[in-house]
Image (tube, rainbow, N blue to C red):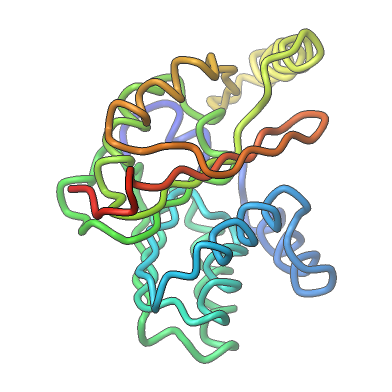
Amino acid sequence: MSCNQCIGVEEEFNPAIARRQLKRYVRRGPKKTTAWLIRAILDRRLAEPSLLDIGGGVGEIQHELAASGAGTVTSVDASSAYLEQSELEAKRRGYRGRATYLFAGFTDVHEEIDAADVVTLDRVICCFDNVDDLVGRSVAKATRLYGLVYPRESWWTALGFHSINLVQRLRRAHFRVYLHPSEHVDAMITRAGFKSVFHRNSFLWQVVLYEAVDGQEVG
């Protein structure tokens, strides 16, 4: 991976953080906003859907959907530590045989990746500057559902992100965070043939699930 932000993701989300996050997930279950997205996906009642989870961390969405009848699972992540922990948990849960793991920035390898019934990006959009490339190429891989968890636009989020990036610059770290306009993100997905079927906000995050218009496969 050559881009600064991909290098930053690998640096920021290191083995210690990945092990800690998996331990928390095993003990407590998915994060609140992740659980909302999972529930919204399951409520659409797709039969053995294939999943493409981009930047899926320790695999919370992967593990939960696999346990609920998902078919193939593909995880693409720019953090090798996250992929390692996700794969270990998949082995423990007995579905490693139908899972694929790819250490890469998604937009660098999108042409190598098959479409999936469900595509998810949980707290991923805010980690990359080129939202048009990331959303445009990832929504093109979704045939039925496209799910996002990403920051709400607010003064407190903007202030928080500015503070985080200031600290990152002082640390000489590659990783940065980005606040992208919700209207722009939504417009790209809508133009791709999807409609919003679930939207819920927490203080910092918004959870949105899109479905192919009229329930027809896209792509």
